[in-house]
Image (cartoon, rainbow, N blue to C red; front, side, top):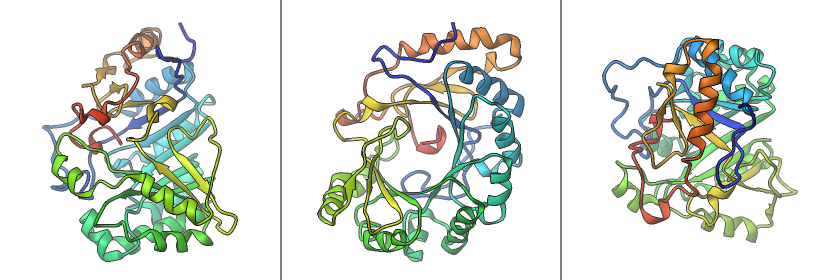
Length: 327
């Protein structure tokens, strides 16, 4: 059985978000407010296990892999992981999401290894607010990393900003000024409630529709989605070099366009960012001979994928914080 992965609702999955570590060196208030605390001695996927994992996913239609964390670039073999993915001809797009900590020094090396798309978390353009949200006084370092990524030649540089009421919700004019002459995709991500974040969610959740209304009033135009866009709603403006995307998980039919699966840094398949504990794949990542059994397991598990994430009902599942399976 090697046909493309498809669930019982007709959704096809060509996009794998693969976490390679849950370690992070930032203390973002919406994700790891108390910083990273290891849960015992973790053994993250090895290069060999990653190779077997990606080879199996490629056989069942995966064409895009995003390397996630925690902070994925904290792995000393991050460049080797990128090269490994680039060596698989079936993988057409290699991306990562980073806090930008190591980007200034390594952007060109990662690009040369085969990385082509990069998402950088910049939750505020006010250095003081950046520090308040991230717990790290590294705004200038991260912004230098953004410049390095733009100079390295990446085909797409995206900036991720989590919308936070009473924190960065006054930053929209600054962000708009920045992308007027800078060719980046700016994405505002609506805050999602997690198991440990109920009070924070109640205090700081801001609906993306509020930003959407302001954009439309200022002449921004909705871009028709492509197959790769997933749940993001993208907008462009004739006077701006950059684009804006909104990720609004509480909006109607958000899950209808789901095209991604997640594997955690310890080798568990997660059908959704929320709801379930994850299914262990690691026992089938030890040799090439196990690939048929691994593919069979993937197909079987897709029958268990739910139609929606149930966040509307206040059900946050077992996800305690987004760093645990890569967001």
